[in-house]
Length: 114
Image 1 (tube, one colour):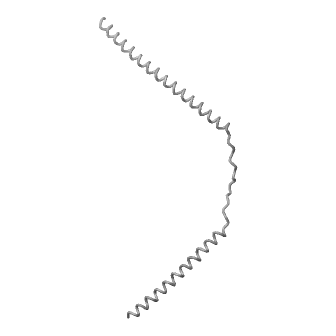
Image 2 (image 1 turned 120 degrees about the vertical axis):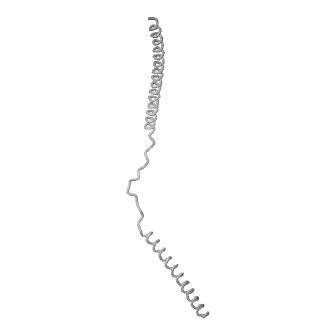
Image 3 (image 1 turned 90 degrees about the vertical axis):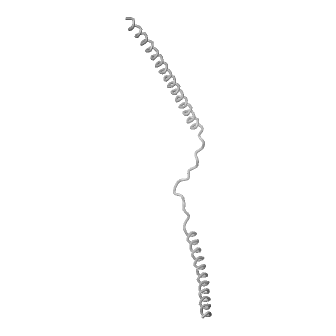
């Protein structure tokens, strides 16, 4: 019985070795097919036009820079004008409040001495 099991195990090992070798051969054939198919396919070509880069245009960038500077100056002038207007409104409100308090005080004194 021991020899029978040993014989069966030996036969199974031989079969596994044969299957392993067959799998390696199949793997090599599949890799070769993939390589040959990749080589047989035409290479992809672009469908768009390749344009040469445009030469550097200094005038365009001077114009853009000039507009940026002018725009910044205009924004700064508007911010300054807004700040001066807000300061003028605050001074006017303070003066008006002072005038109203003084007039109210004068009116109370006038109403008391009537």
